[in-house]
Image (cartoon, rainbow, N blue to C red):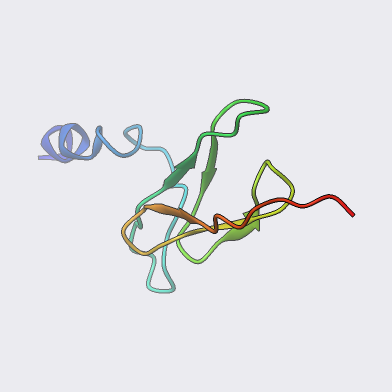
Length: 77
């Protein structure tokens, strides 16, 4: 049974590895992957927020594991 469970979970986490994102009840949550233009992809958990790589906008991870970013034009002072 454990092997079957490990195979089922293999698509989201390595068998036996701690999940990256868990809620207050310890349940695994989806992971957002932000494709940063200035470096490797970055992983975030739901409700995380960060500055976009353009330095003008902000991004966040929603409950379904989707990255949402603002798209305001960047202006220089």
